[in-house]
Image (cartoon, rainbow, N blue to C red):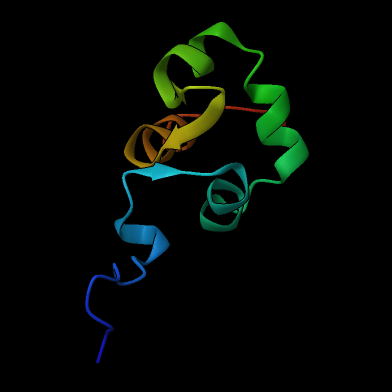
Length: 73
C-alpha cells in the first residue's frame, strides 16, 4: 500500500509528458537521435514542450510523429 501523501509511480506508457530518457525507452529511438530531431522545427513545435528550462516530449505526438516518419532505412 502506498504511503499517505506520496504519489504512486505512473508507468511511462500512461504519462502525458516524457523526459528524454523516457521518450527514448518508450519509442526505441536513441537519445542522440531524439536530440537531433529536436533541432527540426516541425518536430520541436509538435512534440517538445518546454516547462521552465526543462524539455519534455509529448507522448502521443511523439508516437504520431514516429508513425508517420519516413526516415532513412
